[in-house]
Image (cartoon, rainbow, N blue to C red; front, top):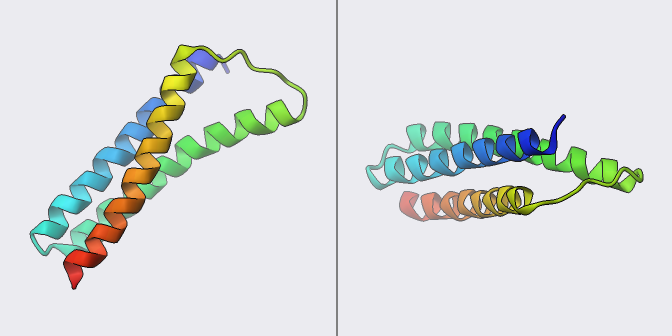
Length: 99
């Protein structure tokens, strides 16, 4: 698969995961914890799709297949990492709202 396509899939899945996590937080603020958990589950699924793409690239490089990394891929990786962090922090925040 073309590296630009992979990068765009990373951005898309990471962005979806981040958005869903923030939707979960909005539900938690309204004490809608079942909806919040549903959104977190969907967020995790999106982020797992992105992480799987990233893992495939890492495995290929470990096997000796070099990938040319441009600014688009760096941008995609930034999106993924910040989305994963947002989901993790929001998960903790939702637990605080429950208390």
